[in-house]
Image (cartoon, rainbow, N blue to C red; front, top):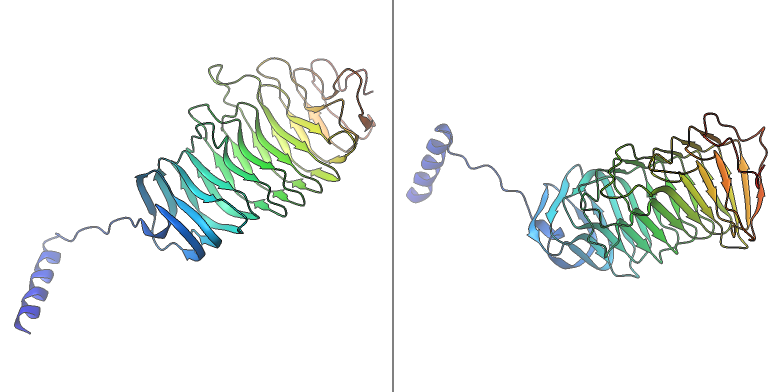
Length: 318
């Protein structure tokens, strides 16, 4: 009893003198853990201290950042080898990793900020989701990623039908190919802002903003601006059908020649309705030249734009 009282008195004296140590950031269950499953809620920042691995799923998992950060690793922050379901919920940030998310199962990511993620090329995106039907990437912020210029994409959603990419913001990222790549039948890409106003000839002047491929896919109310080449590229895989409605593409082609909307000549059926495309270095709307399967429904009075160097639309389109 006397020893406990002495310890208490010493603790009180140290606190009064200002010698209380600050609480350490918690590594917790998300760093160097290959058995992640169930629900994990952060109650402090998860600082991975340059560990080569972050969280690796071995079952369905829900990760709640709860206003905190997951940061500072030399590998991938969250890996899902599949076929598990992965849910990542903000608010919160994932930053300073080689890759943020590499998932091969149904994935939901909402209200997360991704920053200073520098993929080495494998994975080839800041967030890479593959073979994951019914995934949902919504209301996230991707800012200042891929400083080392090795990633092809910022967000890659590949072979993932019936998925949604909704109301995300992409700003000041680098991407060698497209900032956002979405591939999958019956996907919805809606309300995203994708901008690239900080061109650097040392990484890419031929990058594009948004690439969409698939059948019965809807591309609605997206804003794509400032890319080195085309703003929005469409390929509905020869026999597919894609609807473009109320999108805004502005100021693309700043690295050379690029159009606001570029449609590959093997794009199947493409419907353009009430889009606006202005101030691009080539056309507002362009259909790739050459023989192909593209069947494009385009009406000048319904799709508008001004200030495009070579006019509103390419001759084979209008």
